[in-house]
Structure formats: structure tokens, C-alpha cells
Image (cartoon, rainbow, N blue to C red; front, side, top):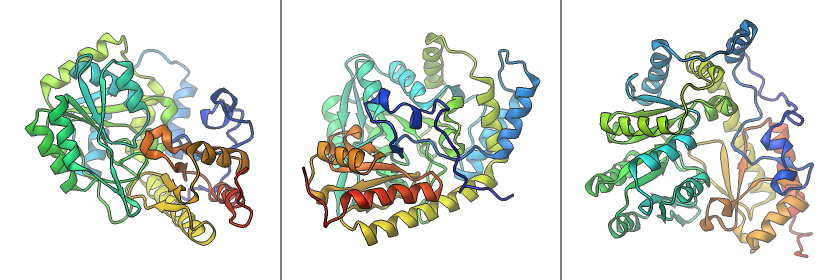
Length: 392
């Protein structure tokens, strides 16, 4: 089946956070948005057909899933990553961030330390702080335009602060690293030796680019909490369904009890249906999408090299989120953000949203039709042309 990823869907006027809430989020109207991590592509047509069939049925009562749901989810992770979660170890939640909040309360106490690797997905900060845990950071090393883990600092922080929980982001958002098996094994060894539980956010695992391999942390550590969802992969975030894999029975019961205390029971029936349908029928669509995104990546890389060589393109190993280094311009983050908004007319994710280590960076979502991406890059070029570049 031919999939048309060049189609310019109109999302304005649909209550899309990405397009329709600029003013509410302190931005001027009319910006071209490439910020939040959803795609400007329709979900797979096979999924839409199943959803439409359910809508035509017309009854939206309390619903749950049978064995076939768990079999489809397990088969996807087994065939793609060599990890086959059983029904008993699969917990369904309305999202990965919701699951993280429950895990923080289930496995730590107020005041205890939780470790993250920065710059990183900003809800990690918010959930840790709002649950009155101590936020501890292991800043990633940025050398010669790429990122690595500071293992000496990683272990020192764990030892010095009695860390209870480590939140791993793999593939890493926003820097685009897909941690190698060796890196994961080293982190796992340190955490195991110090009794640190690992919550592994693997929501971007289906977007790993050639030359790199995603390793499910559950293949290394049976006590880990693995957070997954079809939301990024198939553009289903608004349907709110995620699958959390917890092999250890005692840890699983603790997390189930915390979810129960939250008052949440059955998930959105359309979200469950979409999840099952996507994993059962969406593989061909995903392969076509990944090929298209690879071309978007090559297009962006070539454009920047030719027209904006001072912007460093941090080579992504995974995800459709590009991490761009503007530090060569010598702007403060405030000046950089202003130039992106006021001169380029773009809405990107400011680097410092992900922590102070994001100073001088912007995150750009390339999961859109190429014509839209080309327009965004053309706007960047106009705003940062060397001959006209003068700070006001």
C-alpha cells in the first residue's frame, strides 16, 4: 500500500496543542510549529478503519482487553527487540508520564533522591519535584558535537545521595542517543550493585536509525520497569494508551497498588483498540514512515551544511526529534529564542526547557511533510543569514 506522507493535513482549528494553543502558551499566533513530539501525519489507515468500525457501532461503554491484545503487544516487542513481555507483567496506563508518577510514589519516599541524565525530557523534572522527591542530575558529556555518559559522575551521585530510582531515557530525548548495549550494561551494573531501581522510558524505541540497535533494558535486568507506548510510533498520543512491563512480581504489585490508589481503572476503549490494531497491522506503514523520515533527516542535514553551517546538527541515532546547536552564534538563550520566534516565525522547543545543559540549543520535530520542513528551514536561513545578522 502506498502511504502519502507529503499530504499537508490542516491541523489548525482541531484543538491541536501543537497548532491551536500558541497564545495560551505565551507565543504569538501564526508561528510554524515544529515543537511538541507528535507527527503531522495521519495514523495508519488500517488503524483508522478499525477505529471507524468501532465508532459506527456507537456504544462507548466500559471496556477492557482479552488475551489477543497482550499477544499482539508481546509479539511486536519480541519480533523487533527480542523481548517478549507476558500478559501478567504488562500493566496498561494512560501514558508513560502517568506511569512514571505512579512509579515514583511506589518505589520511593518523599525526600529521597531520583537520578536523571540531562538535558532530558522536561516532565521528568516536573514529576520528581511535584512528588517531593530530591532531583539529582547526571549531566551528559557534550564533546566534539556528540553526547556520552559521565559514568564516574553517575556512580558518584548514586553513592553520595542514596539514590532510589534512576530514570533512563532510551532513545534519549532530546539528544537522540540510542545507548549501546555496552553503555546500558555499565549503567545496569552500577545500579544493581547499589540497589537502584531503573525506570526505562523507551517510548521512542521504534525510531532507531541505521547503524544503531535498540536494546530493551528488560533484557538486561528483570527488576527494571519498562515504559512503552504506541503513541510516538503511530501518532496516537491523544488516545492515551501505554504498556508498562514489570517482570518482578513484587515490584509489579507495588506499582499496581499505586495505580489503584490513583483511582484509574480501564483505559479509553478507542486507545486500546488503536494500540492493538497498530501493533497487529501497522508494520508496513511504519517502515514507509521511517524511510520518509530518513529523507527528512538527510534533507535537514544537507540544508544546514549548505546554508547554515554555524548550526551544528547533532547526529540523531533515534527518534524524529532533531537537536540543533546554535552556540556558534554567541547568543543568550533568550536572544536565541526571540530570534527563532520573532525573525524566523517558528515555534521550536527551547533547549533550556530540557535543563540548563540545553543552553544554546533548539529541538526541532522533523515528523512533518517535507514541504513544511523546507519552509521551516527557509525561515531559519532568513533569520540567521550572515550578511544580515545583527543583534538589535
